[in-house]
Structures are given as structure tokens and as C-alpha cells.
Amino acid sequence: MNSDTKTTEYVTKLKDLKLSESSRSRIQENLLAYATFHSVRDDVYSRSIGVVPMTTSLFSFKFAYMPFIILLAVMIGGGTSLAAQAAVPGDFLYPVKTGVNENIRGALAISADSEAKLQANLLEERIEEAQKLQAEGRLTDANSKTVAANILTQTTAANVAAAESSTQTGIETKARIDLALQSFLATPNLNSTLATEISTSLFTTDLTAGLYDINAYREDMTNRTVALAEVIAKHSAKIEASVKSDLSVKLDTAAKLTAEAYTQAEVDARATLDKAAILVGEVESKLSTLGQVQIDTNTGIITDIDFSIDPMIIDRGDGNGTSSATGTGASVNIDTNLNGSLDSDMIDATSSTSARSGVNLGL
Amino acid sequence: MNQNTQEKVFEVDFAKYGDAIFRFCMVKVSNVELAEDMTQEAFMRYWEYLRSGKTIDNPRALLYTMSNNLAKDWYKKKKADSLDDKFALGYDPIEKSVGAEMLAQHQEVVDALQHLEEKDREVMVMRFVEGLEPKDIAAFLNESANVISVRLNRAIKRLQTVLHL
Image (cartoon, rainbow over all chains, first blue to last red; front, side, top):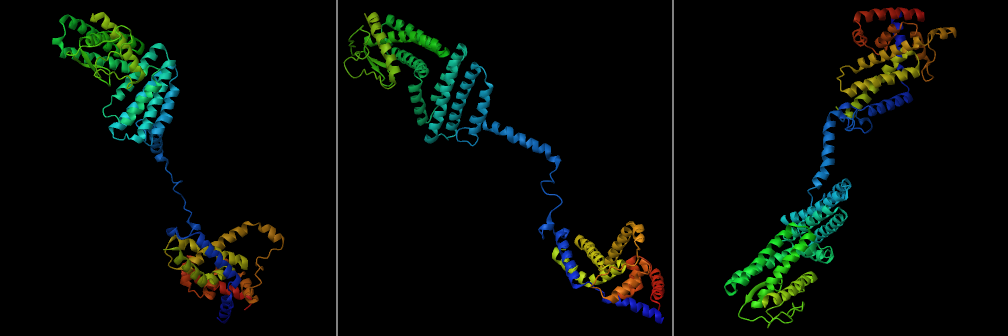
């Protein structure tokens, strides 16, 4: 047993065997670094370097979501231009509509005819936009200039396209342009700035194109016919039956021609209206021989006749009788300035006709 | 369970058991540098336990088990290294390459222990150096207490022979 004890004591000497200080501190340092790097899993946010997770949000992306993402992309991508289609000036997507959508449509309109149709469509859209803004009460003096500019620019583009297209399409396009602008200017409570902007620009720039001209001509003829019919009806008792029937036939014919002119393209309508104008002029001329006519200073239309005053027709038959047919006073006053040169031309023509008619019919 | 508290536990346990594990490894491999590396490696494995939040009832036992496994790996690797070459070069199974910092006395003991079976060495150290009871050693080494006692007796006799006591 003694030797056993000696043996174990011998081994026990190893108790003093320890890590050297340098080794101990080195190992300890390594171990702590290791512990820091391989941080506690439940507490991944406590250390920066050990925090790198197995997956990040990017890599944990599930392919199961792919169809939804594609759908979303399609909705966003295609939806923008769809949504933009309903935009009006001032809307966020309006530049997309005009800058992208309409250029794509333009690129697809290959032939001159389809181009003309497209441009007319676009003009109608510009007008619809303006009407939409007006309806929503968003049409201010500030933005109406832009809106007007849009419409006028598009009108020019449409007219150019119409001129370059085939005859048939050109006429149709012109008619569409006219009708669109006409109905637009007839919009109830249309913003005055916009209306002025459009009508003055159209008047000065598009007169040569005959754009405003034909519409005003039609309207003017309609108004004159209606007004004359009323005047005659009002004073039917004072007008001889034979004269009255003659005037009525002429007015009816003029009214029919005018109505016809609304359905015709410009060139034909103009010819039709010219015929109507002659007839109406004859009626006006005849009436002016019966008494003192009262003429609306804004429209140049005869609104009434005073049979108690004899008409005094000067320069009868010289063809330039309009201004001289003013009778005894200022009651006959034809305003030739208000509607510009076109109207004064028209009135001149009418007056000369009536002067001549007066010679023919009045005697 | 947070990083700081676990690191504290880790540090304390290294201070407590670091030397014991080093000795254990020293007896196994009789090479200071190697024993140091093994000690470090054993504690790294121990940290993995702490980190994962597993409950550790007996850190010491765990560290011994880990060191033992490391030693086994080392032996396997050592055997895999061509023994033929080493014997051809006059290989001495008792490693002499203990560090300079190690006292001659310790070196002598370690060298003496190299004459024992590996399994006998470890029980000798655990019993007489670390002062563990045979049943504790049995628990660490996953053996029965009786087996440990038999090994201890055998180891003592063997060592007596080596030491000419």
C-alpha cells in the first residue's frame, strides 16, 4: 500500500501543472473572440459581427409570391397609361396621357386618313378635357389659357392632317373639327377667358382656313331666317298677302337650305348658304322698303319694322347700299366691327343683294 | 439568455476548469502546445453548448467528455500518420516534446504516465490529480464505477513497475 500511495502521490504532483500565464491569456482571448463571433443565438442583435443571419429579407424571398409580383408589375405598368387616359390638364398623369399614350397612338396611325381621324379624335379629347374641367369647377382663369392653347394646337394639327388626307376624309375631318369647336363654344357657362381665348384665336388664325367662317355663316343664316320669320309673323296684318307669301316662300327655302348646310361639308355648305343668303337678303330688302327696319347692332339681324316711318333708301341699286340704307335716323345701325371682317363682308354682300332686291321687288 | 451573461459564465468556467482540462490533455498527448490547442478547442465546443442555451448540469463533466473526444480524434489521426515512417526513424512512443515552460518534475510525471494505457492515464489523472471520486469519473467517461476502480488499480500497479517502486 505504501508503494501505491507513493505512486498516487507521484501522479498528484501534476496538480501544479497548469497553463502558463501567456498561454492562458492567449487562449482566453481566443475563446472570448470565438464566443463573440459565434454569438448567442437567441440574442442575435447584441453583437454586430455575429449577427449575420442565415437568411436576409432579400434572400428569404419566396418564389411562391412571384405570380403576385408579376401581376402587380403588369397592373402598375399597364395601369399607368390606362389611368392616365382619364387624366385632364393639371393631373399628375396628364403628361403620360399626352406624352406617351397619344404618341403611341400616333405611331400606330400610319396612313394620312387615319392620322386625320386621330387628330380629330385628339381634338375632341382636348375639348372633352376642357368640358370635364369646367364641369368639375376646376377651370380657372389661370389654367384656361393652357387648356385653350391645347385645343388650338390640336385644332391646327387636325386641320393640317385633314388637308393632307384624302378628299373625303379631309371633308369629314374638317366637319368634325368644326362641329367639335362649335359645340364646345356653345357649352353652357363656359369660362369666359377660355371662350375668348379660343374664339379670338380661331378668328384670327383660322379664318383663312374658313373654320369659324362657315359655322358663323350657318348660325348667322339661321338666326336671320328665324328673326325674319318672326318679324313677318308679327306684322303679317300690315304686309300685303301676295308680298307675304312671296317672302314666306323665300324664307322657307332659305331655312331649308340653311338646315341642309349644317349636314354638308364646308364647300357645299358655303354654296348652299350663299343661296339661302340671297333669298334672305331679298326678304330683308323687301321688308326694308315697307318700313323703318330695326337692326340688332350685335348680330346685324332685322328684329322689327316700324311701318309708320317710310324707308329712305339712298343709292338704290348701286350695290354698295348697306351703309347708306340707314334711313332717317340712328335706328338703323349696322355694326360691322363686332364680328370682324367676315361678318361685315357678309353683311355687305347681303346688303348689296337686298339693295338690288329692293330694286327688283320694291317697285 | 444573453450574450453577456453567457460570456461571463464562459470566462468563469475557463478560469475554473482551464488548468484541469489542460492537464487532462497534457497527460493524453504529452505535448504542451498540443494540449493547449486541445484545451482551447474543448472550450470552444463548450461555448457552443452555452450559446445554444442548452442546460449544463455539470460543466466539468462536459469539458472532460469533450477533451476526451478530442484526444480520441487526435489518436486516430496520429495512427493514420504513417507509423512505419516514424518507427523507421527510431520512433519513441513516449513524446518528449514537452514545452520549456513545463517544470522538469511535471515532465517526468507526464513521461512516466505515457507508459500506461491511454484509458488508465486519464483515470489516474482524474482520480489523483483532480481528486474526483471513481463514480464521478465513471459518469464523465460513461463507464461503470467498478470499471474505473479496476482501471485505477491496474494503472497504479503498472506505474509502480515503471517507477521501480
